[in-house]
Amino acid sequence: MKKKFNEKQIHILNVAEKLIAKKGFEGTSVRDISTNANINVAMISYYFGSKEKMMSYLYRYRVQKTRESFAEFAEMIREGKPEMQMKELIKYVVNQLFKFNYFHGFVTQELRHTEHLKEDLLGFYTTFTSKIDDVIKKGVASGVFSNAPKPEDILTLIVGSSLFVIRNKNFYELYVSGTEENYFEEAEKKVMANILVTVFSLLGYHAD
Image (cartoon, rainbow, N blue to C red):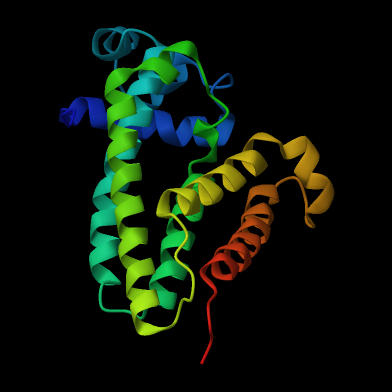
């Protein structure tokens, strides 16, 4: 069931997200969040319990927003050719993972085992997998794709490759050009290119 956040909670979460994206989780204090949100420090405890629990709420809120935006995005590309749809689907997920990369370094026992969050993620993953499956079938039927890999394997490839790069910056930055400040931007480009090549190879894509 979708968690309903009230306006005050959404305001706090939006402020917290901007600060954490800039300063990191450890570098962002409850006082930073309360000051920027123009609220009393006790409000965070009242609504979320603690900063750690607030991160779980924030992650859940972000997943819900991503599901909503994906529904609109999927509708927008619905009439496109299968090769275009597949490319845009891959770009969408990779972009979301890198855009909100600060979440993926925050892994606690609570975050991993929060049932509602697991349900929200499952909902998004199954929706995305179903869309990939539709595009694969459409591509095979039209002769654009000669192979039909499992859609869940495509999702695993996309998410797994992206998260490896996000979580292993010390390693991957050895192979990415640019500066430390634009690491994620350059890493996203490199990962995106590699995933596109791999997925379209698995699909047996035949360009016109």
